Structure formats: C-alpha cells, structure tokens
Amino acid sequence: MPAKFPVTALVLALGLSLALPGHSAEPAANKKPRPAASEAQEENLLPRTVFQSLLGEFALQRGDIRTGVEAWADLARRTRDPKVVARAVEVATLTRQFDLAVPLSTLWLEIEPESTRARQAQSSLLVLTGHLDELAPQLAILLKRDPGNLANNLLSLNRVLARHDDKKAVQRLVDQVAAPYDTLPEAHFAMAQAAADAGDDMRASSEIEKALLLRPDWEAAALARAQLQARHAAASAIPGLDDFVTRHPDAGTARLTLARLLIGEKRYADARQHFARLLEDNPENPDAIYAIAMLALQQGDTETGRQQLEKLLSTNFPDQSTVHFFLGQLDMERKKPDDALVHFMQVTSGRQYVAARASAAQILLQQGKPDAARELLHNTHGGSAEERTQLTLAEAQLLRDAGRASEAYDVLAQALGVQPDNPDLLYDAALTAERAGQPERLESHLQHLLSLYPDHAHALNALGYSWADRNVRLAEAYKMISRAMTLQPNDPFITDSLGWVQYRMGRLEEARITLERAYRIKADPEIAAHLGEVLWQLGHKDEAYTLLNEAARQNPGNDALAAALKKFQP
Image 1 (spheres, helix red, strand yellow):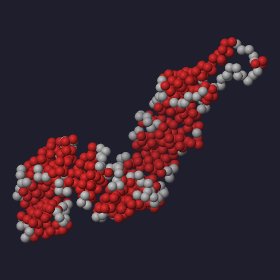
Image 2 (spheres, rainbow, N blue to C red):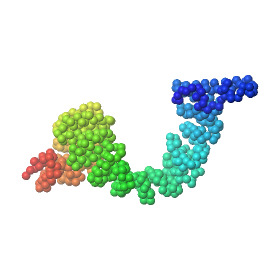
Image 3 (cartoon, rainbow, N blue to C red):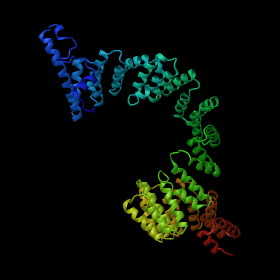
Image 4 (cartoon, rainbow, N blue to C red):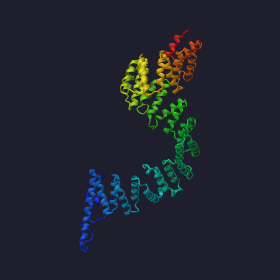
C-alpha cells in the first residue's frame, strides 16, 4: 500500500486541475461575479476530492479492500481525471476487484483514447478475466502503434496468454492478431506456438516451416520444429537439426539439443563429436564438459571421463556434488580408496548424497574403522523416507561386512517396526536373517513380502533357493524359482538358483546346462562353485577342478569357492 503523505502532496501527485479557494492569480477587483450555486460547487469540489482520495487510501491500508476500491472508483467516475482513473484501475486490479477494474479501464480509454498505458491496462484485465473475445481489437491497436517492437511483441503474445486454460481460444486469438503480419517470420512462429499449445501439431508444423522459409537461419524456429517432431518420435527430430547445424555450425543451442537427442538414441559416438565441437567453440561450457565426461564413462573411456570431471570442478557447474560422486567411484575402480573418500565426503546434497555416504562408510570399514563408519551413517540425515531406508540398508550392509550379521538384523528389524511393509527392508532382513542362522525368520519376511507383491521375482528366488540349499520342500522351491525365471529370464542369479534346485532334485544334466548358461551371463564365484560341484558329480572332475581354480584366482578369498575346492581337493 502507498505511504501516507500530506493533502497538498496528494493533490499535486494526482495532478488535479482544481482551483484552490482564495488563491486565484486574478486580482479580486477584476473578478467577475459568478452565480452563487456555481461558486459553492467549485468550493466544495476540492475538499470532497481530497477527502475521498484519503478515504480510499486509508481503507486500503486498513485492509478494507472493497471500501477503498469503491471510493477510488466513485472518485474516478465523478472527476474523470485521467490520473485519478489510472489510480482507480490500479488499485482495483491489484486487489483483484475485476468487476470494478474492467469498466474503469473502459472509462480511462474513453477519456484518453490515444493512451497506450490505458489500452495495455485494459488488455491485461481482459486476459486476467478470460474475455479473449474482446481482446483482439486491443492487441491489434497495441501492435500497430509500436512498429519498432513489432517482432518482439508478436513473440510475446503466447507468454501473455500462457495462463489461459482454453488453448483453442488462445490459438484463435493469436491467429486473428498475427495473421495481418504474415510477411514476418515472428508472426508464423507465434501462430505455430499457439497451435502446438492447443495440440494442433499439423498446423504448428506448417507455421514453423513458413517461419523458417522467411528466416532460414533462425535457431529458435529450428529448435521449435525439432521439439514438435520429437513429440511423436525423438529420432525424427534428428535429421532436421543435423541439417540445420551443418548449415549453421555456430548454432550452439541447436547442436547441444542434437547431441542430447543422439544420446537418447544411443548414438554415443555421433553425440560425442557434437559435444567436442561445443567444447572447441566454448572450452569452459560446463554442460558440454559434463556431457563429454558422461559419454566417455559410458563408452569405457574412464581416463577422459575423469579428466573432464576434474575440469568441471573449476567451472561454475551447479551440481558439484554429482561430480565428486563420480570421481569417487572412479577412484574406487583405480583402487585408490583414500582419494575416493575425499570425493565422497564432498557430496553434500542431491540424489547421490546417501549413496556417497554409504560408500564413504565402506571405505572407513576397510580401513579398520568400523565405529567411525557407523557414526558417519548415523550422522547422515535422510531428507525423505526413501533416503532413510537407504541409510538403514547401508548400515546393515556395513555390519554384515564386518561379520556382525545379528546386529545387522537388529537394525533392520527396528526399521521394520516403523515400516513393516517396506519391500526393501523386508528383503534385506530376510537375507540377513539367513546369514545370521535364522532361516525361519527368512521365510517369515519373504512370505510377508510375497503376500504384498506376489510377482516379486527376487523374493520368489530367495525363498526357493533357501529351501533348495537346505534340501527341503524341493518341489515348492522349483515352482517358485521357475516363476521367478518367467519374470526375469536373463537374471544370472535366478538362473543359478534354478540349476541348483535341479541339482538337488537329482537332475544333474539339466542342472549342468542351466548353470553353464548362468555362468555365461555372469562369471560370479558362487555360480562357479555350484557349476563345479555339478561337474564333479557328473564325473567331469578335471573340468570341475580347472573351473574352480580359475575362479579362485580371479576371486581370491571367496568363501564359496574355498569350500568347493576343499570339498573336491584331489
């Protein structure tokens, strides 16, 4: 609300052309006598005007909106002073008293028909009140009166109308207003945008092509065309953008969009060429640096990926936490846990925050600092229920890796007390219970999980494998694991479980074929241990021994392989 100010200042601010009584510049002797009624009317007008303007302002300051607006509206109608009317329109609009604001804006235009400000005010009100059918003449006049800004004003039409829900009505309005300027590419762009917002993609495509014919080097139009094409199939937008970038190699935004579309189509090599050109043109472009890093990592070029990520840390790239997370992972792959820990601890926000803290805790555990690792997780605060669950799972993993399976189970059980139907907690608690030597709890958790999610492939597999490994309820185990295989036919661990239950059922040749398939999918040490045992039982002892020894060399210290080698040691 406006600040309070003296009466004389208020009169001057409003610019009221009223004579102050007793202050006429004409000498009293030269004054002509006036009728008494007229004199009284003039003498009463100023006090009433000042009083009513103050009444309106004070009412608005007190929060009495309706009284304040009506006071200004009445004053505007009586004085017909343009500044008073403008103020009345302003307060009525700001307080959303549109039933008063619209007719007041009409009054303003009657008094000042050439006022651009008055016409803009009425146009805004017609948009706010949804009277698009009355808006076209006003917009047409505004466009005509501002030829110097015609192109920009055409482009702003859809922004002005963006909040209106009836997109078809907006399209009709924009067509009506922009059509007279069909020699301007901006007019066709405006009509294309309105058509696209209304779901009329065919018309939008037609208009955007007209815009490009008039202005072939217009990058915004090329991007709009690509966006329209990508609505139906992302790949269909690639040829047009590729052609545009070829003809206009400095079009950086178009090249960046093209590169991202190529990534979506898994054309990584092509995308990388475009990102390389972007970097050549602008070596400090953080978006291009990040994209090059991610593409390099996807293609297995970890050295380039690491170099670009390190370079990114010296730019204004907003998500520094993500950069540190990936650098930490790369350092783990390079067997440099100390360097990785430094990076993981600099992940302070974002989607990787919890994962980074969990990785940091694992490093501390490997350094012989289990208490520090657990304290780090306890001091990490998840911002959502999902993140808190991930922290619980990370702490349980930490305790299992430290050989404290019973404590790990207690952590999970406590979390299940708060979220008894959480599928991740149920599954992890089941596997931890088995490791802690409590198979009955494993069954309880998995059966509860399957009652909630009957097609949970990993729960079906885990329960079936548990029975098979203990050589109990083999027919039920086979049925469960087969169901899991149907749900995820290429999962190596489910395939391994199927081979193992076949072995327990005495179907050795089937077990060999199944386990060999699992090992081809993933050369996991536990799958190798199962396959080695089946081969041994089939009489292929040399093949079994060779397999187990090779797997042990690649996975030193694995308990399953060590047990198998000890069992079948010649």
